[in-house]
Length: 88
Image 1: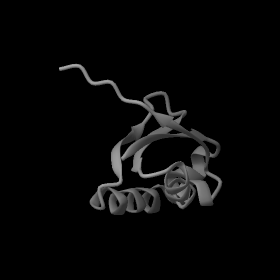
Image 2: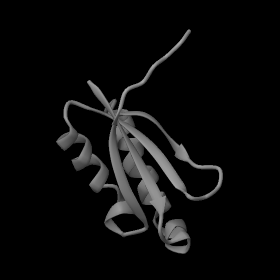
Image 3: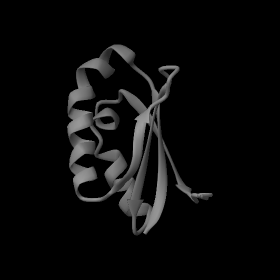
């Protein structure tokens, strides 16, 4: 399993409020499938971060572009492989 960071840059804050419930429902479904490592908005309102767990870039991309925020052009997607380092 590989991690992919989806940076969701805010494009339309007004439309974001309308689409957000569908965005959250979509991510909740992926979370139930074990496909999300972490997610949440940036404190400055500039967008959000979703870290997907996937077997390939193509799988992560297919999940990311199916997000209602991307479909509705509310946010711009930037997707990169992420290599986590955890220190206990």
